[in-house]
Image (cartoon, rainbow, N blue to C red):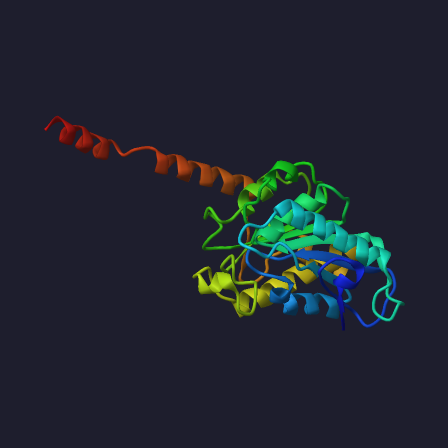
Length: 275
């Protein structure tokens, strides 16, 4: 496995590659809020060890990032992977074996990027809301998607997993992970952790690496060995496939119920005003 600096080609970021290979698959990965490419080193190295070129821009790391700019940087990263000979100069990437992935806001940025360039697959991992909304373009995307979320926070306002999966225009798998938090994928010290935004979860990281790698090996290379990772009917231990349409309906009903005032509470308030 080799590590390179994307800045040499004009884009701040890192790229991890196998030691050799031609016409390799590649994925551009977007980091989460208040994180950077370095917080996903183990994930990127793991992908490279399985023969996938994994590159990540290291931009938009501040508290008020531009999701559109991160999407643009993801596309630039793919251009570098396909247009520059990597490693010792003999490594090449096949232009039709490309994917976009990301975590949190980087997941939404990956979707926004996919709306601007044809790729073979998209993997939004624990997606967070973005501006503009990733759901505004998801319906136009017909490529396979793997969307991951935590069981405990899939219904939270910080998760965009259900609406994103429900509006996706192509084959989509919405899979939840037991015990996973939406910030557990990023590793190392982060400002977000110091602010109480969740710590690294090794179990979540391991499961995500396996699910993402298997999905990409099948969708980018057509390797039937890994077809179960792209099949919503496959049962995978400690994960659950969710029907996005049903989940979206449940979310809407829950929010409507929460917004409807309780008659007893209203009556109590009216009586207090009459006193």
